[in-house]
Each structure stands twice: as structure tokens, then as C-alpha cells.
Length: 70
Image (tube, rainbow, N blue to C red; front, side, top):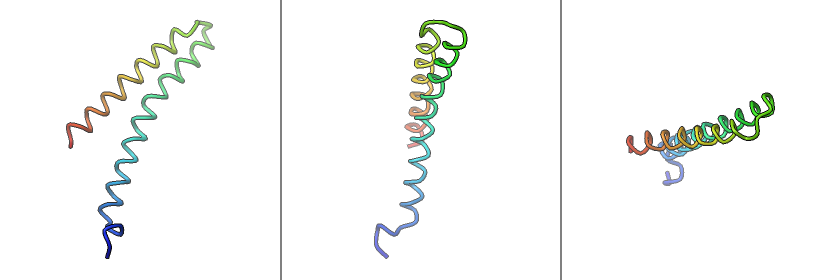
């Protein structure tokens, strides 16, 4: 059995991809929600900017959680 067939490697890669996806989704959804609310309420990018900052904060928080586990 070669190193590339190691099931623990695949499990680790799967876990890493889930973590990256979680961070990306957590950063994008608040921004998209801000865009939608700006269009709905007629505000000019105010809620979009707030959504971007909230998404960045959530992304960094997730990264810190992952770094603490390592």
C-alpha cells in the first residue's frame, strides 16, 4: 500500500476541504445578505460594507479556531 492510498490522508484532506469551505461560505453569505438588504431597502452599499466586515470577522474567527486545534 503506497502513501497515496492511506485512508487517513483522505480523511485529513476531506476535513481540510470542509474547513476551507466553511470559512469561505461564512465570509460570503453576510456580504451577499448585505447586498440583498441594500437593494431591498434602497441604501447605498451601507449594509454590504457591514456584511463584508462581518464576514471577514467570522472568517478570522474560524481560522483562529482551526489554528488553536492544530
